[in-house]
Length: 227
Image (cartoon, rainbow, N blue to C red):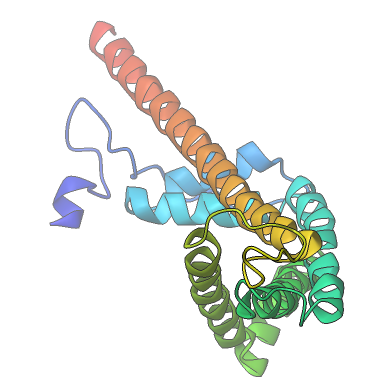
């Protein structure tokens, strides 16, 4: 079915979106968009192209910079969580979420940055290393734990109304130190914002490349008919 829809050969006036022959001799210094256009011609279906585009975008220097800067937040979370474990009677799991979430997020970001560093040294070496030491399994495991912990954090933080930041006589248990509570809100909001931004950029790039190639294919077909 896939071969019929995206056939390997030109059988009509309109060439297949995915039937362009594979480009040879990839350059290590090829531009990001050139690599994305190349992957568009090589991919067998749209989902594969989307996955490859995401991988390319995550390997850029801009992505590395964003991840490196983002590492500051989980490191702060670790410090605040350790120093305020007993300072949130509202829910004593909130400081634990801050501490553990910071540790897991730090580990994940360090994994990503280390993987990017290895890719820049040599894609073949990085791929062999992944296969040999099981880093792919660790990446997936860390990601799953981070997602579950993030969902748990949403649950414990949004179930309460905003508490007092100091203990009161009216409700002595409904308070949480400001550093812990605000940092929890910031970490959750930053995660939502970062993921949303990454998805939007991916969609914009994928749709732009797709429609440009589709328009180019139609133009070539029209030129062929006129000739």
